[in-house]
Amino acid sequence: MADPLPRAVTRLIDELARLPTIGPKTAQRLAFFLLRASSSQAQTLGRAVASLHDGIVTCGQCRNYADAEPCTICADGERNAALLCVVEDPLDLAAIENSGGFAGRYHVLHGAISPLEGIGPDDLTIDLLLERVARGAVGEVIVATNATIEGDATAMEIGQRLRGQPVRVTRLARGLATGGDIEYVDAATIAQALEGRREL
Picture 1 (spheres, rainbow, N blue to C red):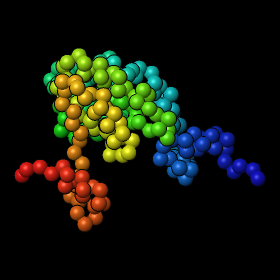
Picture 2 (picture 1 turned 90 degrees about the vertical axis):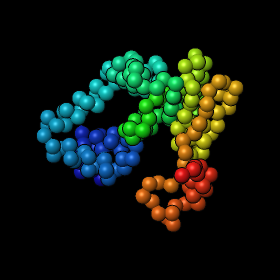
Picture 3 (picture 1 turned 45 degrees about the vertical axis):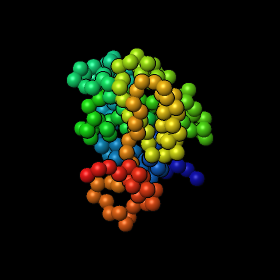
Picture 4 (picture 1 turned 135 degrees about the horizontal axis):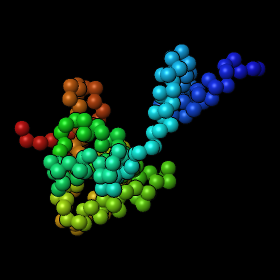
């Protein structure tokens, strides 16, 4: 049976479907949106994708992606250099930064320990984190890994590796979401919220 679509459209659908969270139907919708869009709009998107890696560096201090070395966060003298938030990936950093609730610096691990995926501690930037702490400027390390088995394993590894260092190691609190009803919350989250309770 012949393919009813032009090869260029099929190729675009196949490439789009390889992206995370994009299934075949979404890939088709995106491809046809671009086909119906003006040629200049499609070309602008194409140039943005083609030049994505041009000019992007990995910050030598925090390991975040940036336009320059050091990144704007590490170069900001107003930030608290003694407070270091460790995250799994740059998207986690962006989420914390967008909250406006953190004025320290960051360290990006670029993943989490996952034996099933063949990712061990040496595949992450934990050694670089230890070097930063060893320099003595960090007073507290906030481990902000995800609340998953992999995130917990990574947090435990970091905690063990920092044991004996003159630095306070904390973990992000877990619990109830603002605006949520307790009756709809799962048991593990309720248990974590009770464990992490604090004085009023």
